[in-house]
Length: 261
Image 1 (cartoon, one colour):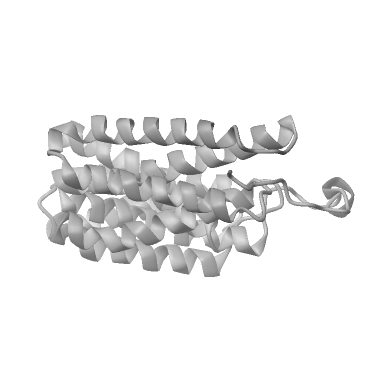
Image 2: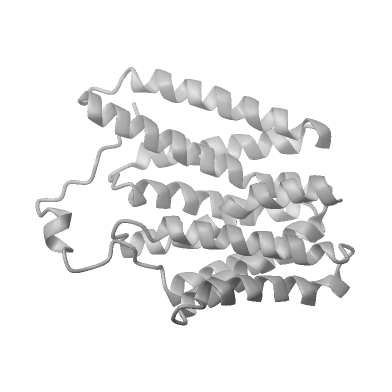
């Protein structure tokens, strides 16, 4: 049974935060952690998929934990463990198959995992609403940890592509955290593109390096926006706020690698 339930809150959120915006950005400290994790991706991805794997596992663990807390689910140890295990199963599947079979392997693993989640929900003794909340949160977290595996798939095409995409994520996340009034999204995307331009002569990607870094920058802003929604806690900021920018960049980097390389 996936023991996940909405967090108990004796005081209504609307009353407690009536004068505040529901959008609260993670801030500088989570951004520094994202930069550090992105740097680890950039350093290990050119060395091969096995070298990248430890950093990816950390990313998947943060993604699973942060997603449940972001959705107000706590305690959620079983759900987090299931979502994380789904990500690990996806990693193993991609490492075991040939490059041209990776999408099928990922879809197969996620399909089996979603079926497992449905079966486990039959043992859930909560109300219908609690079962639905549990199922959707666990399924979404599993999907996100599986999507993060896209970094492994992209590394099989080009480790440099993963490295440059991670650099774009780091640059955009850092400049977004500075929150310069009115222009911070433009600054963040400009910094991501600049990171690609700097990386261009250092890799074999040529001008495509700018596209990979810019894609990482766009994904980072999307991930940060999701992690900032609905009065997130400090725990959310240091899990989802750190991980979602990089997780969101995985499919973008992989699809670009297929299209450009």
